[in-house]
Length: 534
Image (cartoon, rainbow, N blue to C red; front, side):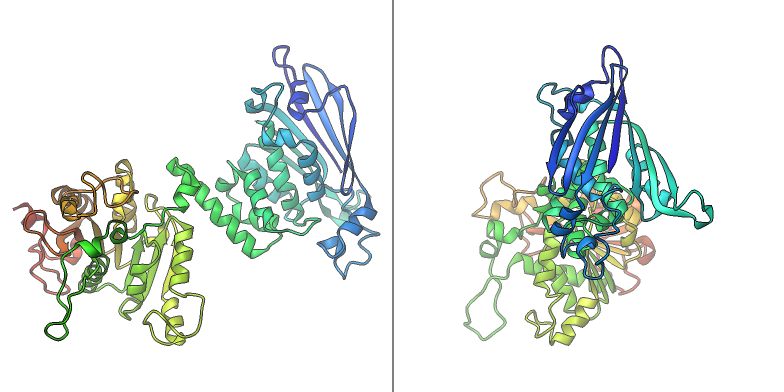
């Protein structure tokens, strides 16, 4: 297997700096032993104006067969002749990718102790691979490398030049030209060589996901062929591919939000009542049992879900979005009512979605433990539910056309400068017929004995609004997007500081009468925007 990397330079920035980056001196020819043969590194030319390094991998076919027994194509039981007629020693593949990683490990990591500034410098590079397997042809080579900033030349290699009617082989001669950092170029090759070959010479274990994400950092999360690359690199093992795609989506969202992926993945919204003891602190509600029976607290989280369900019923909603669904408490309540025929839970945290799936027993047929009935009923309920990863500050065509959307204790977790983006994504793009928004009433915080003065109810809250602030925001949103809005208290309403939770119910203007009457239910008690202003 053979590969060359060429760069050009000037007297001020000599091309021979390539030797510093690769940690291989241009005046030496070096050899390195690998598990499958010997790797040679040499410089056919090395001047200030032009420098070329060549990597030659001599594969030991016997070692390839012995080490690959039972693993991959070389050791498959139906390929007994493959050890005698095998293109692996000659065509670029995962063998060459492993050699690149082993011999140029420091350069691949972007490290250079002698010249620390060099790895960050973009170089004019020309990479040539004389024989590259390309399952998908030259067009696929272009699709994989061009989005990364390369000018791509992929010339198909004829099966036999003396017999042109036989057509082309599955090999191409590859030339890449571009101005990139050397570390990026090596990472592109490390990932995409085995992807184009669509085979690996070793068993693909779970740690391959980490290798892929490490080498794909900074480019794979935005690549248009991300799914194909991930699937092929991980030898079409679906469990590994799914894990990688989930982590790539987190990386993309983290980059867009200028935060850490771990911070996003940990964004499971712990119930507010458990964080500050709402269930114990709020006034008690009388039991409906016999006289003299003990009073028992009704958690605010339960009252909040009841208020949301009541609003959705009044809106006549059947197809509902739970935006920022977290671990699925509201989803479970929605599933218990047959009127909600299609339910979609959306959250930025894959960890939260996995926990929601576990709690709702979506993949566990059998007796139901959540009040949904038999295993058959549970399967019917889960068929109505879909969990989707997504950031609520980005438009998503999958969320358009629903009867209602719920933002339950979500907006206070969004940085204020990003609220307009959330507003546009929900009210402007998805545009459901009704939207239910709940958020804490900061005025009520003084009633929580366990909450220190000046502290918010949850450590992840970016803000908590007064009733006036929430009303002003909701009315402006309604006016901008053609909705009418009404406000409802959630929980016991204190005469001085109001309820612990405030709820806004938005209706598209076409669904509500001008006098505040909901055309579907005839309810004339709603507080419209005009009435609230009065």
